[in-house]
Image 1 (cartoon, rainbow, N blue to C red):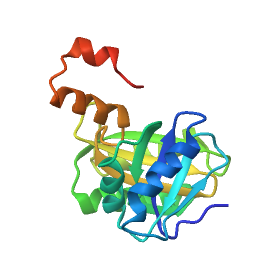
Image 2 (image 1 turned 45 degrees about the vertical axis):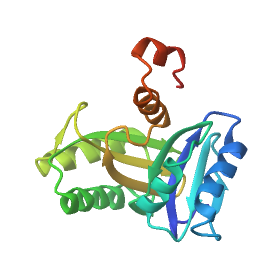
Image 3 (image 1 turned 120 degrees about the horizontal axis):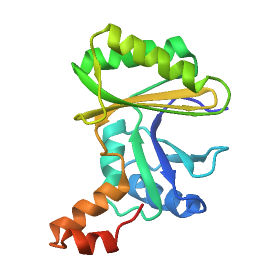
Length: 187
């Protein structure tokens, strides 16, 4: 089973790219924390990054390097045991601390510790009860990812975790138009 202690990032990869992404992520963090540890989960394409760095420090160290084969990188703002009430309370506390009034809600459950539909419904109901709007198009995403016995929670700027979005911005910054970007788009 997995532990929350020093878990700072979840990295998802394209299937079969786990080892390459592990090396790149490790290289991006190693200079700042030579005790960085990357764990392959029992789920293809899902890596857990353990480091003494702050989650946002780790996130920006990794995002400032080209990570080929990665799909998403999510900073772990809160990690709790996979228990619906713990997850709901942790998300509500994070929303309150960040003073966010609307979010998109993104929930991913891997494993059988938590029922995904029940979790989504409880999160949605609890947010609405606190008068937090749930929208698809908004500035922030509330991310909840359950991996077997642990759950991570983060509120991040919408789509900042997506590597393809980063690549699109890089292509745009060097002057490629949309038609050329589409040709080089990485999903």
